[in-house]
Picture 1: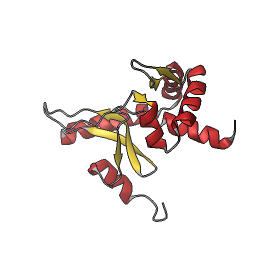
Picture 2: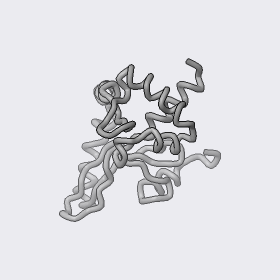
Picture 3: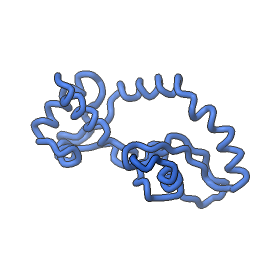
Picture 4: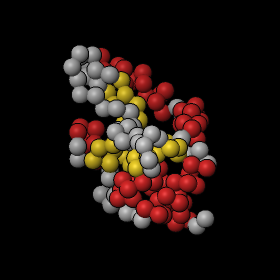
Length: 150
């Protein structure tokens, strides 16, 4: 397998999101701009390694158990959320609004942890939700502090 193949496989895995946890070969093909046959071959390899699994419906896939294991390892050894949560909770009680912890990924921001609003009706950013950098306050704050050459 070449480095380009690894890049393509990661691109396929990155297609899955909170909003779209199950995708068909055709959908993935369009998202990553690869032929359906290439996507099918890479999905077969990813499936054999537990990274994706077949979902209900012909040619549809979802993240596999291996992704869950990686998340478990990451959560155990990445203490960003553990360190940030007490500060986020204090901020939430001061402003009485949801406090998301977000990071930049490419030209998007993603919520990696959140403390919910104290209001019954609130805009909720789901953990794992991707939004453009210009969308929402978290994205604008991150955008404001990016280096100019980014």
